[in-house]
Image (cartoon, rainbow, N blue to C red; front, side, top):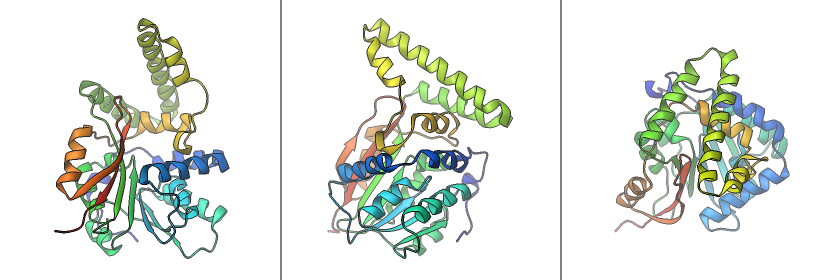
Length: 280
């Protein structure tokens, strides 16, 4: 189902789905278990049996899969057709012919589409809303899908780092304007520069191992991959960001209590798990 998507999401943008297609080759039991652990930790639960779960911008489908394995009834959607295909592929691998997991194409900026979905016990959108071209509208639309009195919202948004965030906005814009054959070398060059800067920073602080530990190896946090996260980070456009305090205040003003959070003090994503309070 796809209806009247606002222009903001149709502008020049990174092909997230193509990146997720490549990521599917490394999805294994360990990554799935890490994704499940991330959901359980942030939401403060051991299972999701009897819960409804809306995955806004499902991407690879990894967290939709994790939620389904934890017992939730899942609805996944993404604006990118290849991301939709990725999510369907994971469903085919692990939950074929399952009526409790629905997948379709849709936009979080399309209010009519969102309202047609109803409300959910858990609304999940990790690292997605800031790539729509209209982050605050996307967040407001996501909030509207959270069930009143006890429904939970789990989101992650890029942290506002002032001038650094604006520099990365420019980098991302350059990447998306390059011919395809130059994009991979551009990513490699930018990551090399980034690693050198990080090494110099921590060496001057007499903490070289801190930098080495953050660079080497494959990262399994949340079940994701360093390689594909780097491509996503360099190319992810549109790109918006907000401070931890701003987003926290925004959620509280809309009747949520933050039950868990992770504040990122670098350029990565901060996370919020918030529960919708009862109407007074």
